[in-house]
Image (tube, rainbow, N blue to C red; front, top):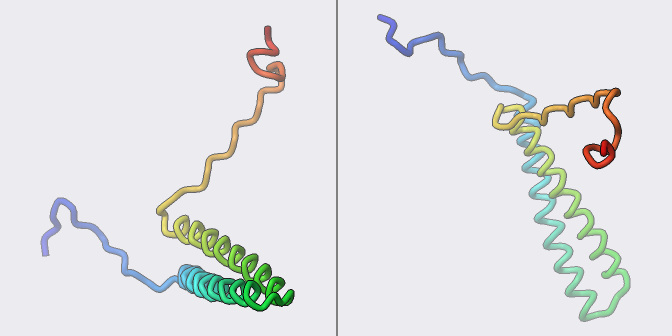
Length: 109
């Protein structure tokens, strides 16, 4: 077989357990978020119609848990995109020169 202009060694795709764990975590967090949103809707309906204080408490807990699950899913999605090379980490801020005055242009006047 002859080598062409763009021929090269191809790397074989292999299973990466870290990416599989991130994908499973994202899926689990999204399913938990959906369940908690439906539970919060149900608890809210029960609280409005029956007036039970325990339903209001469970509504708040389910809403807060749903918020945390969605935040976790977003954070895991960012880690997955960085692991795949779709995005890069932000560059660190440059250190300030100790010789320059504090306060910027206005303080230098």
